[in-house]
Length: 133
Image (tube, rainbow, N blue to C red; front, side, top):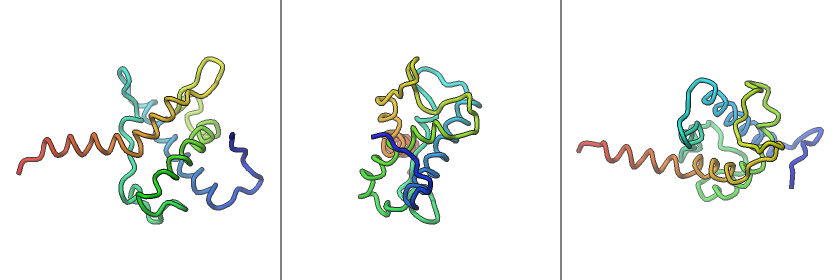
């Protein structure tokens, strides 16, 4: 269901929310600074690394790649909330919505899959193809 922020969100909720606010901010900056062609977007360039993006402390509850399913579920839940609450670049949304303001869940799912898996795979394939041994 829809996440309703508590008066005092617990530590896990705060950690995921903060993480998602950072992701949405990066996407909005990308949309504000570059012209994107066709299906390309900042979502096609952001990717979490195997060390959880170089974070000093892992995200609460996410300690190995075996926890990515849980991470995916949390991103699907918190990214739309972050997109609604983030105050920077308020005229730009990081996710897609229809004319009535309803979230495009297919876009969200694809963006999360790109962030967690697909963009990293594309980067590795491109890097290995250009690697001269």
